[in-house]
Image (cartoon, rainbow, N blue to C red):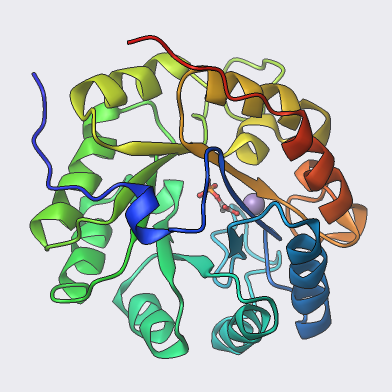
Length: 266
Ligand code: PEP
Ligand code: MN
């Protein structure tokens, strides 16, 4: 059964983006200098269409870096001013949404731990009623396609038509080569159910390891996904979160150069 959602493709809300769409930036905004320097180096590659950074970080255990909070939004806004690139961050509740709207964030995303909770997604959707902002919805951490679609539907019912999905892989008890099992079939089925929906792959959170990012990105493009969101950092090994999977802006540039968009026959 096909889902009917009112959607505008990424090309309408990220008009500078070509295929593949490239979104990059640190897992977490850590300091003003780290944020601005990473953003400038990414912009200098000429290959990035939007900057990402986590401001509120959903950590598994307490006592780890939980993000810069609203102070970090100022750094992100400054990065936008200095590079001209649109900015995107993760929101998990209405307070995050309101802070982002005030700070001029261009695109919001809903993280995997939030997509699992219909109350939280509905709270975000309600906070966005009457607001024309693009939202990207990550898959839930568990492989539940209905929950992923449900999140997209909640936003669409609130009037958000600038929607995309982010495929970031799924938690699994089985230990494989990936931090999160890609389970590509779920992304393929999502596209079958909602053909007009653009899907961005997040190879960083699938891989958990920077060596696998180029390969996973290429696989995503071969599955006709619209682009990739890749974590990058000026000093990846010293990152305050997700150190093993981040790449320098220079490596990001090389990964993008290696990607081939093949025409997919329908
Ligand atoms: C992130 O993008 O840094 C993040 C926390 O992602 P996810 O929700 O996919 O775990
Ligand atoms: Mn991360």
